[in-house]
Image (cartoon, rainbow, N blue to C red; front, side):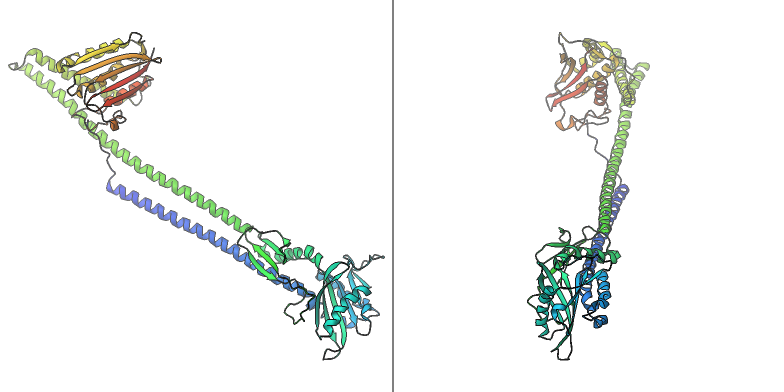
Length: 554
């Protein structure tokens, strides 16, 4: 039997498939690039937003921390301060307390009074640690008091700066065990800054500032800049790395800004005091928690996943379509060749029968005898009948669930049918037919006509491809509740790579002889499966083939 080679799709279909694949690849590539660019643009936008938020915080910190010094200490209302009646300027301190949270006290002094008599305007709701508790509750937010010890410590620093003629004195000192930053505006009587006229200043409780002020200021600044309200992660750390506001940031893409926590305008010419620590604090802003960025990344990743899955599914669909197209073309070619082969197989016995009948009808028996002519007609009719049976079986082999009549059957009955069908052919070809049925072989449950067709195909193949070996052996035995029937020949054999293929419909091997439909082993295999059994082929090229049909016992 010769092998049917697969038929490739026609050239237009191939070019169409290539064009579709190229289009899908280009579409997938541009879609991927668009999504990636959108994702990168979202990251850049969030990064820019974080950078702008860091700049806004730096600007907001600088303006707020210098606000009390710039807009409160320079107010003209302080010129009306009188040491004997300081209550007249307490409204200035009250307004400043309402606007700026970091001054804990304001103080004022005029040159015509001793420095120990300086007046302190303290917060009513946040009393300084160095001031005694108020005995009489008051509804006014400012408590006007004098504290000689505190004034003495503060003015000791201020007078040293006044001796240098400075207009702004800023330093740090400890009051009642608490670290304070003091900022004071100095006014002189003369233009040479030799005689001090007035001092107005405020105190900043540094521990309270670290605990409360910067966290509140950070939230307020970001709330003012509404476009930064996207869940940005913010952190403010001091020079020792301690977090003053916000939380620790693990994102490497962090925007940092440096600032000095001094509560005056750092650009002013202030005499460098050793008592003022100019530390460098850090504002850090990360876009990692940006809600818009998170949504964009989720959508972009989802679109990438969907696009990848869709492209993969489309590619698999194209591959399956091409394979199906090739399989359809191969099947069409097989069927075409099958029809051509069957037509030839039908014509040959019919022509032989017609020739024999014509010889008999015209009395032309000079070269052959009447018996020989009849034997030829009988053999060709059997051949034609066998071919028709295979064709009929093929037409039913797709749906055979209800065409069998199962009954208990002796294996010897099957062997007798085989001998009856092939006796004349085997005698003519000179075959030795051997039977061997084990004594304990039980009956099988089978359809007799179907098994007859099955084994007729196996014996017919054995006879066709017998080669020089003229021995045909049929054997039956019982193994594990099943009955194995073997058909063994000493023919040309089947190559190992074709054993799994010869049971397919229309398949014909490389060693196939001219003629044949390629249906015999396919029909035999299907009938064996329909009986709840199986068909196994063992073969060795040049030595022969053994086909084993395993069937369930009755």
